[in-house]
Length: 88
Length: 266
Ligand SMILES: Nc1ncnc2c1ncn2[C@@H]1O[C@H](COP(=O)(O)OP(=O)(O)O)[C@@H](O)[C@H]1O
Ligand SMILES: [Mg+2]
Image (tube, rainbow over all chains, first blue to last red; front, side, top):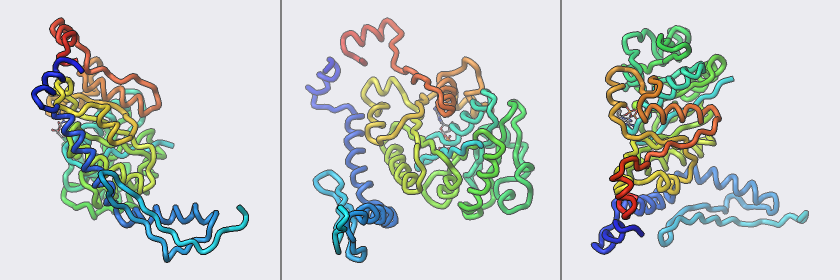
């Protein structure tokens, strides 16, 4: 820590850029978590495509959603498995 | 076959049009054949930034609606060998062009030009959809401000969803003395937050305003301003060269070095 930072810390003042960075981080977690339904559909299709190599998925009973959890974004995928392919 | 690069941002007023003009001039100076498309229909700007406003006969909408051939609408910038502008229509709205029409136009121009730069309107609506439709790559412009970086993040997400890969970030209007003071987001802060590759940094520079007054982009002057040099470097990076980033934080003065020594403005 240099002298300037030390002085600021003593005065209990944070650099405005650090405030900006922290605020950005938080607002983006929120922004990124509220992605569009179309975007989620794209992700859903792709996940199903990959998993289908190994398991038979019930597409109608598959839910993909994003939400926030204690400051981070969570992508939750619930896939109903109909059968597991025998080749593996 | 050329390359179509869209210059986009989300937030308005961050320097897309300025960037399009300077990259065009910079490319033309390196003997590349370049065309700039002003896709900001209804808010035509690139023509005045380039100093070509008096030469417009046909525009983008005339081309896609078949009122003229593409060739006829291209304005050649006489100061350079190979620089052309396709101006936006001023009296129409964004819906006058469709993404499919833009894609076709870009395909056609790619046949003849090394680089096609598309100057994108602000926002994420139809105008944005049109501008990115024919693009191979994107340059996302932001300033070091919370709102601009936030909008850049949104645009990066939309570009990825649209299948556009390899987008790179241009940080415009950096003020090194404010960064040193801790009052402006630094390059590293922004890159860390956006997790995207950097194409270059352009400082805040009054020469940009002066040159825009005259309709002569800063990149035109050999050994000119710092911002002009920054744009010329970006041009070379687009062409695939490895060009070191300019150092805006040199302490040239004795006072500056002294301050650094005792921990101020390091
Ligand atoms: N690096 C810079 N330094 C100083 N002024 C700038 C810089 N970049 C852009 N500007 C100014 O900011 C304003 C907005 O720029 P513009 O390129 O029109 O933004 P956009 O096309 O994104 O709306 C213009 O007045 C322009 O001259
Ligand atoms: Mg503009």
